[in-house]
Image 1: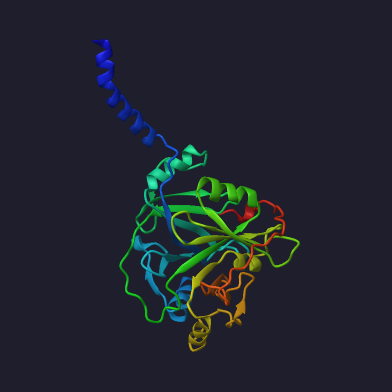
Image 2: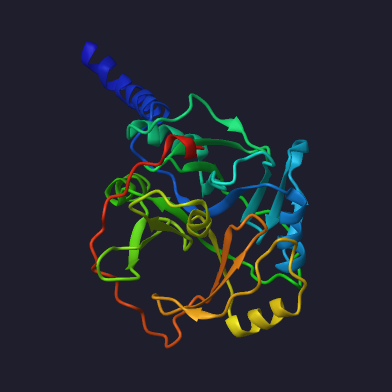
Amino acid sequence: MKLLRCLLLLPLCAGILSAQSGAGGSATRPKITGLAKVAFKTSDLGKARSFYQEYLGLNVVDAPQGAAAAHVRVNDRQIVELVAAPNVPLDFPRLDHVAFAVEDVEMMRMYLKSRGIAVPEKLTKNVAGDLSFRVRDPNENVIEFVPRQVVSVAASPAAISSRLMHVGVAIGDLDAALHFYGDVLGFSEFWRGSGNPQSLSWVNVRVPDGNDYVEFMLYQEWPASDRLRGSEHICLEVPDMVKSEAELKGRALAPNGRALANIRTGVNGKRQLNLYDPDGTRVELMEPNTIDGKPRPPSTAPARKGEPRPAAAKL
């Protein structure tokens, strides 16, 4: 009888253990499907809005709940968030946080907790009203995880781009970054680049369940403010750089924006064009393919470990 009772209770016990494993942080990572948002602090919200709306032709709407922010809609799943910060010091980083879309935010929180990553005790609502949470990567960049969702938006005929291809983040310790983004989050490295053979400059890692990627902007000494605003950047995909350049030359530049730079071919073999918003933050335009259709080999230059982010520059 006791044996029969134990056998009958086995499925129930297994179900309880399975539920406890899921609630207590199983090692299963939910899908990370892409870049959902990149947020920048701006000293003048009006000028920043003008740059993205009038110059780049993107739809800009006020953030919900009366927040001092605006949302630049690149497409139905990606936004650039402009956060009003009129009193932020000139040399303080403008990149506020990067958000990735995941299929289950709570599962992601519990997964990261199971991997020893410091996470908040519970989900909270962000500016958009979504339940989300934030962590810090090894270089103190703030990373947010938000629900995967698609919002119906009318495409602007003047939009210079319809895809946020990648975000650049400042990284001093490549090994630590590869462990966090690769071993823990499941991102895959697909290219390394350098401006010289003595030191590695960039490492690209793609989200595990999509095509968007993060570009590690490697440094040895913490960058000065002007260089940092070039490193912490977004990249918008354009199909034809010559056509995009011609369109931008016919538009009035937003106040305090820099004059249009020249088209150049990057080390990765793709045509690029750099723009700068009124705060000096770089917005890179890039074609999706190399100029000759051939991939460029990754750099073999050594990665040199950089200094930690200064306390005064921590978000």
